[in-house]
Image 1 (cartoon, rainbow, N blue to C red):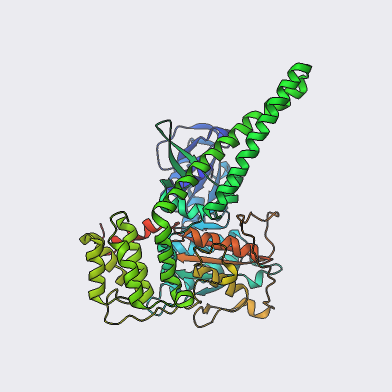
Image 2: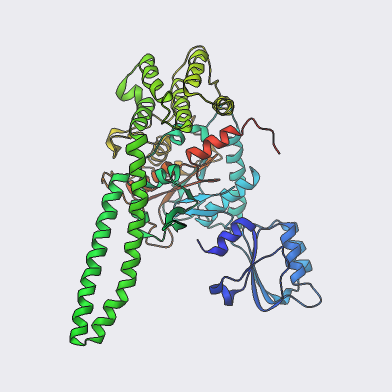
Length: 546
């Protein structure tokens, strides 16, 4: 992501100088700036503060701060603010003024994030407008909370406004089948708690990684490396099981070393034959190959950390977690067996407190609550602090049932359990996030209209909704790359998850896009969510607002 876009994400209002973008001269609109004799590009949110700042730069009378202005609003500018702007500006100096609808930030090529319900609705509708989609709007029917319904209605209102302004929005072959679905985080809590063994999810869960940067120690100095969409190797391995990823990176490293050796021989031969052209070409390729070699070495280092962690601490814990969430399908173990299996891990000083909490939370989810005496026994064995105990009890706030109760009843999954045998790429971790079932059922027109009702009109009902499918079974899954054309011509399922999206759910979006021809899945939320994030958020639920 360009630095100035990241700056905008934080600051919301920027002034850019187009002839010096290569030097990244970007200024905060709301701070003191020096006049410059060149055009200025204003990338601003439509707020009173930003409008005032622009009119101060280009007053109707007097000296202007810049030669001319190009004003770009990140979303629709309300009529009163636009009237204020046009009435107060030196209009001959305004070269362009547009609403560009980018009030969201792509986290990855098929993942967006936004940050409440009114603003959220604007941003979600902006994503649809940017994608040229006018989808049918649905929501997961949560009888205990109406937030999904409220947000879905607000989004539909915003979409209708955008459609009136741009009648061609949502027109085109296949667009009638596109759907937007609003989901809340309680839809699937298991996928937040479970340990994932694919590289990206495991790295964010266990390594010192912030945003897209790995922090690592190199020659006793702290360094970081950025793994992002432009890195082809990263897109190739991030969704692979760590064992598969190690194999791929090792092969890449061997090829780099072999190529460097071949080039060294070529340079030597060119030197002896006085072939300047041959020597020049060989030398030009060496720095790039060295860079690739260094990158591979870094990946191997981080993958090795994941492998060590799995072999040392997680292999048995991951197995127990999978047994918990998959029990009624493959294991059929009774309640007593699970108790005896869980207790040794809670009593193990080598198991971290957070992993103990994750096991207890999974057990609560699995049983739909625990008898109070058993939960107290778990807490005592795990030696949890009062703060950790309160964090677990805060599940009551989001679950809709008490973490403690007299008799446990199994949670009913509205979209099926999280496994499909034919999809199991990793036998040691067969759980599939429930969002994948939702994506596929939507494409195949199998969603229950009571569990996932429409707001407004179901536009897809007028079209044949049969989906063409090609089952994706390759053991070494590649990250689904953006479509070759600049505009995707098929249908889309756009899913917004209130409360954060996990890395395993992001992976599902790419896998389902790969599986179904002529469909693309876009998944979004306020932020990517790791198990650490979730437990931290859970711990703060009972705290009074600052």
